[in-house]
Length: 435
Ligand code: UDX
Image (cartoon, rainbow, N blue to C red; front, side, top):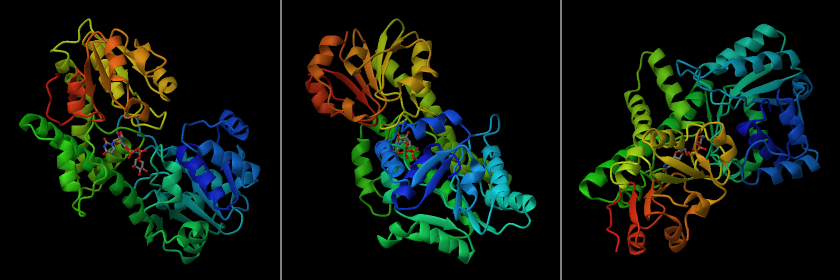
């Protein structure tokens, strides 16, 4: 497994749990040393135990020595990062190609080289070309096998996936892949075999479709607010239609994270380059960017039109719960906007504080939810961590200057909040006057 980041580490640990002997390789010496000591570089529920037990069982190990790990391996997964390239939004494939070159040097006997990183259509061809050029004698196939792991539930997503997509036309490679995934094959997980190019596109199409679904319900939420409808009922009303489905219809402050923003952009770029602009996708990207930039206005409006000189408490900084990942989190747009409007911002997140510290300036870092509320003129909840779902409303009121809550994830009940005396605003739901 080349790359011990999110995808590589989770996939490596899960394969080892399936009984496969896995070596995770990373160029970051410090990370490898920490992993060897059992310290996780990321927060992902259950990962530490999974890693530890498989290290003990000697099925999982970590190294910086790519050559040693690749030599003799039946399959080599490329799971390195593909960040958005600065300036143009294309996926930066330099890490993928560098890995391919190094793998080429180490190949020994028939090997399946698998791209697990999300890579643009055609990358598999390029990886094959690089390896072939470096090692005309090598016996290998290049396969695309995209991951569909969600942060926070990555292990479950790996162990019980809706499907596995494997892109290769080589029967020999298919056999190796089927063998690697045999545990899932036995529990009748659908395995979709496609061409390599199709498989690469499946990943982008899946993420872009989900981002579109979220953006659709976010726009419907805005309309609900204007006409006095309830977006959660709309989501349920349409989601129960099996053709639509209930998932990914939670309105919120806009999607973030390591995948949706990057992948939607990369697909739009690929399509433009192919002369087939995807106008829906381009619009989704614009709407989501504008939403994250503009949604601080909701807080301002709830504070009576100005936050100048006011103190705003923010609960939740990460782009979603159960992760410490701050990449493209809505908080990174909302908090600076509130600061520019003159507010003092007090923040707390259960896992995201250390990453957030490098990205947010001038905020007051608090140790828990209640400390955040001290003398606050309003509270906004940006991430639906479980521990924010059942706050003690009376205690909150006693700490805050005024009982105002802007719930960007709709985790509280409007009537109950009104009953408790809160001025409560949420996303796409009719306001209820405080009693
Ligand atoms: C996503 C895909 O789900 C996963 O299959 C892919 O491999 C990687 O990208 P992830 O980024 O971890 O996973 O999180 P996800 O749970 O999909 O949420 C992404 C963003 O959408 C978050 O900001 C989340 O808050 C937002 N979201 C999600 C909504 O606003 N509403 C929803 O209904 C669902």
